[in-house]
Image 1 (cartoon, helix red, strand yellow):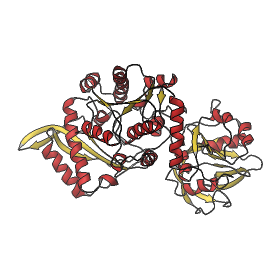
Image 2 (image 1 turned 90 degrees about the vertical axis):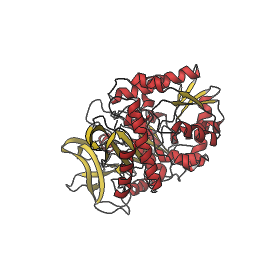
Image 3 (image 1 turned 135 degrees about the horizontal axis):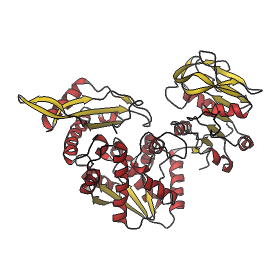
Image 4 (image 1 turned 90 degrees about the horizontal axis):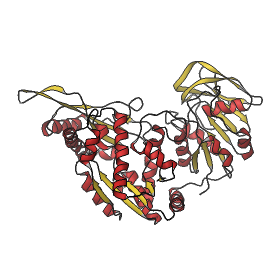
Length: 504
């Protein structure tokens, strides 16, 4: 499948969201570092993403302007991308008197192209500090904000720049603006899941060759789709499932049954004692993640021998939050599949990550195309480090056992009342500070449990779910009466941002 839209990544947390939106509109888009532009050909359009830098900084990431012009295709600059194009065309920028983050109103002056059928004063989402101080010769203002500052420019016939982020849902008509840009292309839509599946399988076969692939599986959506995808590609694959002791109640048995049903044979390695020993005394969340990630590799090497190629179900949020996308994005948290040893293997060309440019719902669509049962695809996301990141502070078997029981009651209650499939992710966290309570007229000094349920589209943003009070009351009562060591149940009503979905 030929790439139609190249999205140049300047380090925004939302760069891949642009790719996703373009794919949703039917065009095949991929993310590239700006220096790769000179290697690309046959494109229908180019989008320059936002980013954390100022174009005025001497070390700011650049673009090969001559190569961009030589493509002779419509170009859209978003936020940093707009400022970079403004500079390249001969305009100037200046630091704003205040930074502009959050909602703004789109005051449209030219609705012939980008803003056709877009509501005047529609909400858009800002995230920048520099502003345009002088327009390039021949450029025109297409829209301003409430203060009259230009936030959308036309540089020439079909080159545009916008100071806001149309890819996020907080820009209420952002999808329509991107669709209007795509209407400027000479190409017809050419992206669908079936074609994408064939392209991914072709790339897997080409990259793997005769090498054996050791595939890490957990039973989650990502690794299940990965394993079936490798099986479909017909490569030599050795799937390994590691029971770290950080799993939920009965999870090992359920995972083994699930893979048997999809026709993939897995090897199970039991390593609870090894992981608990490695985590003993550690309380720092970043160090815990890295310990688990590195030990995971140790277990694989121990049981697989020499690993020619290591496959894992890494998704884009893992890459961008760990700041290892090849961009200059900020580190949010290090995912277990982005520890140094993984990066070293990647540098050696020994890591296979065919899902690394996808979001969770795109992986589910791919899984449906592969014939994976719905119950496996609709399972809530579960972190690679497992319950270790739902146990702030030191991880012990006692805490994990308490957490497992409470989590089982929570998930069972959601299923019973028809809420499980309405929720994107539900999780239970054991808080490290004990609280005073009363049980049977006796003082109880035990752990609080925090319940969390969120809705999300792609894990980049999330909102908490308003589960009915009677359902929460029933779940709380069952936990308090049925789980030893717990005397308080809390419900987390934080959004992402500022909170992440998991506590660690």
